[in-house]
Length: 65
Image (cartoon, rainbow, N blue to C red; front, side, top):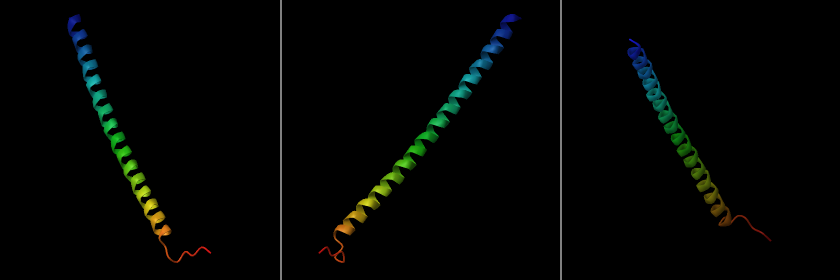
């Protein structure tokens, strides 16, 4: 009878380990998505900054005397 108790405990530990791995993978995917969103936002800001710099450099109304 003791073997069944040990097998039951082992089974519970095994299920718990799989559950934890599922949670870890889900958290990793969320982290990847968050980093991708932040990178896209940063690239968007960089593109706007570059566009503003080009526009300012070619702006004919800015007369420096």
